[in-house]
Length: 137
Ligand code: AMP
Image (cartoon, rainbow, N blue to C red):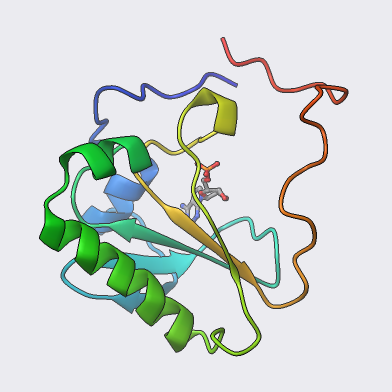
């Protein structure tokens, strides 16, 4: 699969379209800073994505270029979303991909919330490269 452009924001990425209301989403939480919605291809019983409303490609872009207000508002919204989902007691995992080594597919920053059962070890145990990885050219 071709990897996205991680340097120039693409106004037609799928999450930009969701923010514009061009395509539907199953909203969990929304405020001035962020939108949270169910992942279309869940990897756990609860799999929700939280995205900032600003045009940021990934965590690298966001932490370098977003204002303090945007950063605080975004992370507050992540917390509000976990509360809205009732996850604070049982627990949850947060995950954010940046760049080719992470296999980030959608070039608009998103934090995954994974929960609803014991979500297992933190990473696929293959840092030595015994499993074929996707072609990242
Ligand atoms: P990542 O690999 O970190 O870029 O994750 C992208 C995520 O976006 C994947 O988990 C996809 O299932 C999810 N996704 C892609 N399109 C949609 C969509 N239209 N609505 C909700 N989730 C989506």
